[in-house]
Length: 73
Image (cartoon, rainbow, N blue to C red; front, side, top):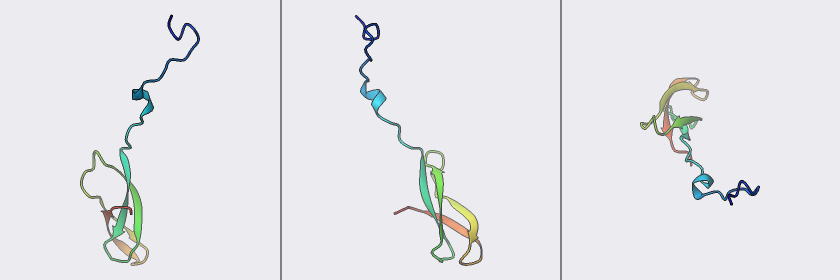
C-alpha cells in the first residue's frame, strides 16, 4: 500500500532538505577620501561580477566622493 493512502507522510529525500545558496552578498563601500567612513550595500554576485563603485556623500569629508567595494571582515 502507498504511504499517502495509509495516512502516513512520505519520507523526504535529500533534494528537499538542502537550501539554495544566496545570490546577494553584502559588500562594504569604503570612501576614496580616506576618512574611514563606509556604507554597506547589497550586490548580486552572479550579475555584477566586477567591483562596485558608487558616488555618495561622505559626511566626514563633507562632500560627494567615490566609494569603492571592499570585503566585510
